[in-house]
Every structure is written in structure tokens, then in C-alpha cells.
Length: 89
Image 1 (cartoon, rainbow, N blue to C red):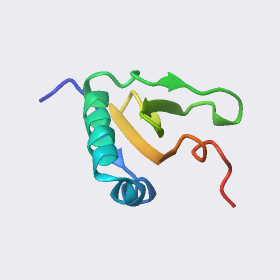
Image 2: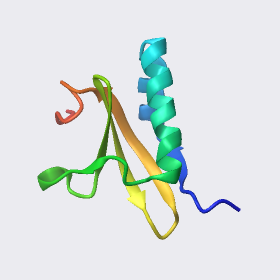
Image 3: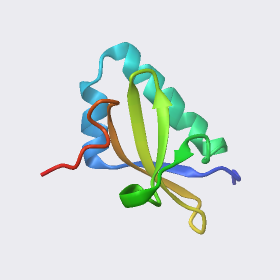
Image 4: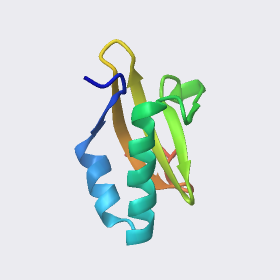
């Protein structure tokens, strides 16, 4: 069995990825694959978003949570950089 982490994409994040332009989809999916071997490839967020990590891919951001015990990465949100950190209603 691999020592890497398992990437789990939430339903909302999967929907967001499907809506991206094809080139951006490829870049984001490649970034998610790289997280399996380097789960701390993004940067940890602070304040209200503490416990969440952000990975940059072009104009898009991937927000994710790490579960070191389960060796799991939960993709919470994928969105354009201007929108990703805004609170949703």
C-alpha cells in the first residue's frame, strides 16, 4: 500500500471543477494528484479559516483539510481567487 494520502473531493468541489475551463480543470486535477505525495504543498490559512489549507493553481484556489491520522485530504472548495475566501450565504 502507498504511503501517500488519499484525496477525497467533496460534491461541491467536484461540481466546481467540472465548471472550470478545460485547461484549468487539467491544472487543478494535476495539483490534486500532487497533494497525494505532498499534502502540505499549499499554505495553511489563519483566522476564521484556521485548519484549512490553500493550494494555488493559476487564478484558482483549492481549499482543503488534512487528516494526518487517516492520511486523507478532503477537498472542500475550488474557486477563482477573487471568490474563494468569501463567506457563502
